[in-house]
Image (tube, rainbow, N blue to C red; front, side, top):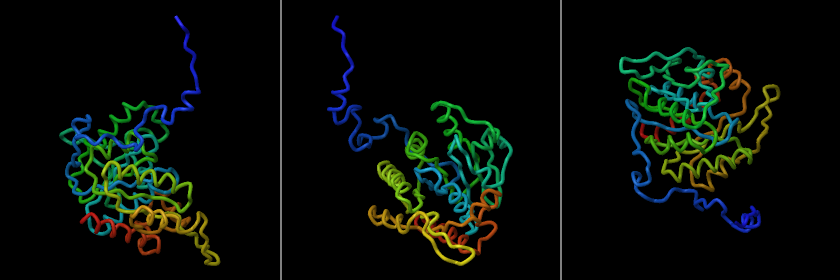
Length: 293
């Protein structure tokens, strides 16, 4: 028998060694033929939007919480679903803890604060316990969060997506009828590169992109009042223009937003009439018009 030696030369010469589809998109076949489930609504929820960044550390969860609270302040029955299995932030941001009870039909009953219902993996595990799970367990937990929560009737549910464009994002976009996606980014190029990947993902799976939110857009010195664009200026606007999507609004870089979040008292709750509070409320109003809330 002739011994075959591994050669890197062929891999280097091959322009697509893994044989991946060049476009990154699945074949244009009916969903059932592709082995995909039919998209369905979340029970007792009228509208569902996803808040995504594809990049960690840009303030996506803080924005998702404040948007859910802003919808409630506008008079809508609002809910928030934390789909980040490994790093749930919603319990801290909403100052909630404790294990959810089960309804008569074995559905999880959301925890509520500030007029917003919420569900998170963080309610089901200890705050200090890491989630050391493989993919199948993660997907099972996600399915339960998506389909086994008794929301009791909502006008809008905000999904706080984890960073990236992997299994969780694909499962949600392939199984749930989303009314749109909101992309969050800072003006910095390194964040925008991942934000563009998120834009491409939603476009490929046919989810409408409602627009982008530019977070940490400008820092205003509390002492002298001077404005400084720490992460650059107009980066998100340029991305919106190049991809033909709307800029929903700007959120400033303000230490109070961080302090409020860490205390579990989001800006829309404690300072709705401040400039930053009004910014969240205006973004929620624009989204509401787009999805006919």
